[in-house]
Image (cartoon, rainbow, N blue to C red; front, side, top):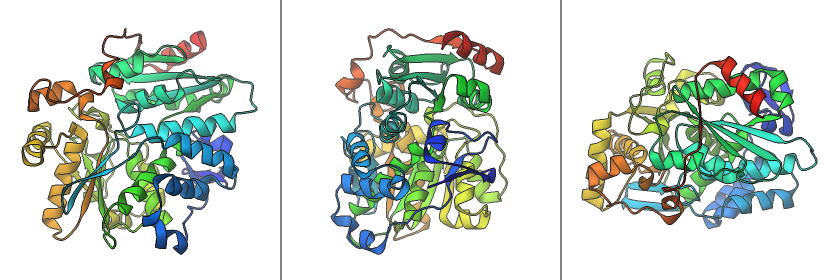
Length: 433
């Protein structure tokens, strides 16, 4: 399969170039020339398939022309070593738990798949691969875990100073080995801009064999589409779910759109954001106005210029009317998010993190305005990753911290402080790598 830039359909590359180089030289994003579909035989029986069988079918549809089936099966098997179960709060109100992986966040699916696919694509290379990643919280931890001590790789994580939780920060900064953390005096958008600047400097990108682990990399999105199909099969036959996605950089929602394009019956999508509401505003007005992000308690969604918006536009043929017919948008304040955490715990005995709480609010409001619909809210991270918020709302120590996260608490943070200047960042890369 060939891949083209969203900025220039005539710029076309093969799979290895699209995944390893991550970003086209024109600052677009790579998309497949043709979005694949799964046939009627698959959809007539998908409810009988397990998670691995679903993952293999989807991965083959996207990458089967370039990656042999045995290698692809190993990649999928190594990715899906944990489940994504649906937890039902009520007959029409469901939570898709995506936090059962090693770093307790949905990013584990994409990061693990990407690490394995990159390893296969570079299996004959003798040049060290440098993975750059900007994070607003969970991406960096998942990438660090997926690539930690993987031969032939080094990882540089950029995160915004003071804007991730303490345990999230330890996941970025305490592993050591081939993982380096840069603490940027700015926002996630600043971190993302620095990463993109390195790829757009072709000499720098080629000299240090740079690749991205952010959702600008298509190999992050494809495995995330696995769990949309896996979630739908856990509902009663005939139910077309409304997927409600807590959204920041919009990679997770884009993965849902890929699942829909594959043929998954979906009633609707809801993009749930905090006060960084650039996309909900666009869906209401048709006017897309990126702006500096604002800090909130749902920090992984603090994005003011979501990269994957251009992929969403491409999927819908750059038609606002078509996009808004498939996606609605809602935004909520920190106070509303805190109240939702308390309400869900009181009504259902369920602990939900600040991002999932934003999603649940959007799901509740969508069902109220669309009676008879069934929602699946994506719970993207374990609530223990946000102890300050959860302790404040539910009481200290009420949320149990899984051992794989608790063991990081006493480890030393190792991070290099850096400003938001492109020149300083490029100088650091050249001086350090």
